[in-house]
Length: 517
Ligand code: HXC
Image 1 (cartoon, helix red, strand yellow):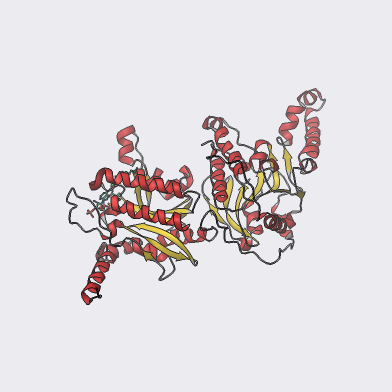
Image 2: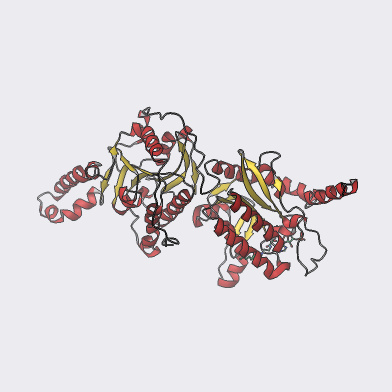
């Protein structure tokens, strides 16, 4: 049948109806509040002219509560594929102007179809969430739709990177789709995420709680640790997603986008020495070390406001994409506590899924002592780091900058957890515990019996430090690949990473390991 003018008019009219979703006034009102519409968000996300929409003409299947005959443009979710930095990425964006972005059966099907496509094509998936949750009029079919989305989030996990942007309400079980993805970016002002809102909490427990206490980006970034990035607004959230993607491969069987130079630059950087305090009791700012050793000082920190005693994030060293895990001794002496262990373990596992080499920077006084930590399960949580590092088969390079005591020496990827190279600065102290604590336990009797116990203690502490609190005992045992000067760090790490980029390590086949959750 030839294409008539009428056919084209119909197509044009249908398209216009969908594109005008919400109506001019509501769109203006939204923009005036500093919020983008669902469609504007996708246009902002993708390179101009590259967004290919799927399911524009999908209609809802609701039959009850006056739904029959109602027109819901695109059934409240815009889905498709576009390009970011020249690479295809799948994305959906919930349209709050259509029934509050609520999820019905067809809305869910559009998301599921996109998830299936992302899995088959091997491309990342970004979900922009702005929704009142399950569409009440569609009852159990809406719940079923959510379950189908969750199921696919899990199928996609470890296959392609998954991002969630929370740019509006994300209430009830709906929060579990973002929680099953790799990174959650949440806008500071308009977004809320919770399982039970203040009214439900009050009714069920009698407790009064405000949304600010538990559901905002600030609360999730600092207290619950549920999210990874706080964005100032929609555009910033999109910029963050694009930036993180620039370090990631499209899928688990591709390499990350390394930019490998022809030769490795071994130029020394003596300024790094200035960062190391004379007194080992003074903290060393690992963030500043990272800034000096990575390309252009560019480090994309993940979960910056949560468990600040450990730093995790992405960077490049001489073009090689890496995931950095660094103790931060400016916070809690760089000790590993429950939150730090959770944060690090999850990040390590993400990097391992997507072939991103790990660089671990160590300056830790050990696992954080305390009743709260013991009762909170530091054994189980700390074990996650041991598990994650041991299970990781990507290149693993460790640099011991200063303290590496006890279990934390092991948990920060020592040689025996499979590190491919372990470097130590001459300032490294690798021991079962700090010299003061060790001398007090080992030489208790000598110290008490001495004429001047304080002087004796100082002498024994110095003796212990000399013998054990240095890198040379570990290096002598073959547990340190080399002791290097701090100025050599960037070149040596680049060389070690480059040497191990072709690493292949296989383990006996199994369904999956059982990480202590
Ligand atoms: C159908 C919904 C809806 C929903 C909002 N709307 N949520 N329609 N199903 N779940 C509609 C409203 O009726 C309204 O329609 C429009 O969207 C905008 O909503 P408002 O309330 O006017 O906007 P606002 O004041 O900004 O409040 C937004 C809101 C609130 C906070 C999201 O609407 C709200 O609390 N909604 C219900 C949230 C909820 O309890 N959802 C179920 C969660 S349980 P009109 O026509 O007036 O413009 C759940 C289970 C998932 O999701 C389980 C998965 C396992």
